[in-house]
Length: 151
Ligand SMILES: Nc1ncnc2c1ncn2[C@@H]1O[C@H](COP(=O)(O)OP(=O)(O)O)[C@@H](O)[C@H]1O
Ligand SMILES: [Mg+2]
Image (cartoon, rainbow, N blue to C red; front, top):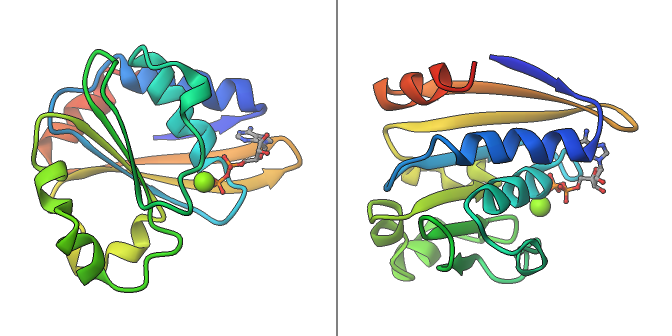
């Protein structure tokens, strides 16, 4: 499913809509260059889960921020500075991922062999000053379902 967003607000709204459909254990992997809107989308998801938006910042310098006050726990990963996959494995990465919360992972390409078997893949691309192309690709049956709910 391709969506063209022509403003940050629209990207945020898409995130909110996704948040309305997520279930415990869902994993959303974000791919896209710097400035493509991954954090904006993550903020939308957080907001849709009822998490105060001021709390959601680009976690670049920590690999994970947890938000526990929404409808579901949100684990917001930013792997930009991840040096090796072992580092997040050691931090209990899999326990978060396969727990009861929702994981949103920026720079998911860094995961390599740690990429889960099933997840919602979202590729973001800069298409203009305030335009972003979002490509939603379900990997696994659960995420086909999630996508259907978005139409
Ligand atoms: N349609 C859009 N969707 C998302 N962000 C947009 C859009 N148009 C412009 N922007 C701007 O692009 C930047 C995206 O930043 P950010 O979400 O931090 O990117 P990333 O996390 O992918 O590095 C923000 O400054 C935002 O205001
Ligand atoms: Mg970011």
